[in-house]
Length: 225
Image 1 (cartoon, rainbow, N blue to C red):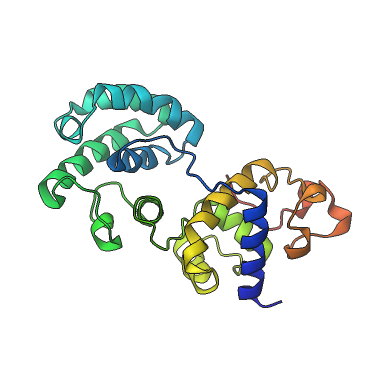
Image 2: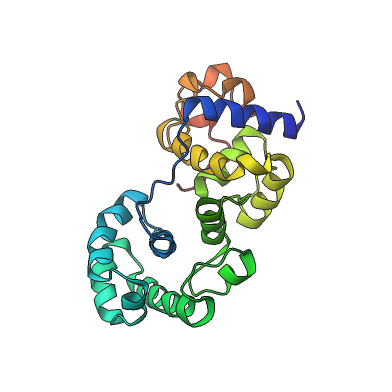
C-alpha cells in the first residue's frame, strides 16, 4: 500500500472512530484560541482548560489583554508552566493584533508567524479551526503516531513531519485528521503503553505485530506526549 492510500485509509478509520473532530481547548473568541494554544506549550490541554476561564473572565476583551499588567497574567497562568514567557507573549501578541491586524487573528501563515509566541503548530491550528484552511498540526502525538503508522519516515522534526503529511493527506481532511490523531494518541496509541491488541488501525500500522498485543515494546518511534 502506497503512503497516500495508507493515509486515506487511516483518515477513514479515524473518522469512524472519532466522528467529532473537535479541538480540545475551550474558547469563544478567535484570539482566545491563540492564547490557549500558547499556554499548551509543555502543558496539557486539560490544565489549560482549568486556567483559561478565570483568565478570560478577568480580561474579557482583546483590548484588556493588550493593556494587561503582565505580572497579573503571570499569576493567572502560573500553573501552566513557563508562565513568564507565556504571559509576555500573550500580552504582546494581543497588542500586535490591535496595532497591525485591526483586532483580528490573521488568516495566513506568514502573518501568524510574525506574532509573539506563535510557531507553526499554533499557526496551523488557528488556520484550520478558525478559517477552515488545510492545516497540519504536528504536535507530539501526530509526530509519534504518523511515524508508527508509516505515514512519515519517522522524523521527529515537526516541519519535516508537516511537509511529509501534506503530500499524502487529503487537504480538506488534514486539520480534522490532526485533532483525531490526538484523541487516538490519548486513549489507544499512548506513548508508554499502547493498546495494540485493541487498536482499530492494526491492519494499517507499520509497527504492529500480533505478538506485541498491548506491550509497550511495539513503541519503536516513541516520543514524549
